[in-house]
Amino acid sequence: MTTDPERAGDASDMESVEDEDDTHRASELSSQILCRPDVLAALQDRLHAQMLENLPAPVKRRIKALKQLQLATTNIEAKFYEEVHKLECAYAKKCAPLYQKRSEIVSGAYEPTEEQCVWESDEEEENLTNDMKTKVKIEEAKDESKDEAENENIKGIPDFWLTIFKNVGMLAEMVQEHDEPILKHLTDIKIQFLESNPMGFTLEFHFEPNDYFLNSVLTKEYYMKCTPEKSDPFGFEGPEIYKSKGCTINWKKGKNITVKTIKKNQKHKSRGSMRTITKTVQNDSFFNFFTPPVVPEDSDADIDEETQALLSSDFEVGHYIRERIVPRAVLYFTGEALEDEDDEYEEDEGDDDDVDDDDDDDDDESANVVTITPKPGVPWKNPDDCKQQ
Image (cartoon, rainbow, N blue to C red; front, side, top):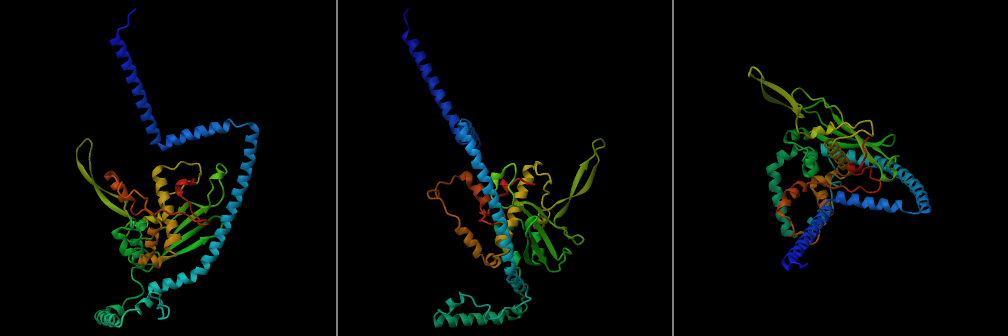
């Protein structure tokens, strides 16, 4: 039987095209897998599980012994963090008088002496030339004569804590315009440590008498656990915040800025008549900070994504205030602490010019995000990794 060369050639071409299609589909599938970290991770986990399953029985037995040793190490690590927390509580008591003196200076209750007001940067002024010294003195004299009457009435450091809140991106996002008049009355933020059962800390926001609420102190409590989970003991990475509790704000009549009243028109289904109803809804405000999401008592209860995100944000803000804002308040007021945080970030080489236009929005949204890397002994870890209780 004679084979038609043209038909043979067509069949060969068809097979070649099919091979190319298969190769292209395989390439696309590989690209999709590489672009899906979750799929890739699942494949890696499956391969790893198969590898462990195929190990000889004596090796599996010895691995169990190693896990017993690892569990004992984890329990010792938990005790270490408990001791670190106790040490931190002891040193916090030593810092308390210094923070109290800071509060008195900020509020104007105490005027520091000339000796207490000397700072290293003052020595730089001594190195100025005589001409510059004279000029500075003249300008200072003019300013003093112009503003002398106003300066005499200034007490402490006005808007100290409000300025800090507006300087820090994480807090600035929370502060609304209608919050600012209230935060002008914030005189101090203090930390009270809970040493055990449970471990944790309380943030105390002290306010002078104001036209908005009756409370002199607003509190926010954060509770931590420092015990490895029985279901996942090797997931333990140190103390973790698992719950927070706010306080009730006793707002004066008509001054509650955390709610707002809106009007809504409703149409009757059958008669077609219209009516206007008023509805009270939550209003954006920093003071919503004192009404955190409720964490279910049942540790196995599911938490929806929105609540989980709110909890994560709440834990991060609480930790940040406790770990950075309160201990270094004056440096956040002057902005020096913000410069130090900027220095902690390094730009990747070669990425300066490789920015797509599509990523501009993402860059803008992440510009004020502060990433906190806990140090050993710091009672916090990424809430996204925490199992809520």
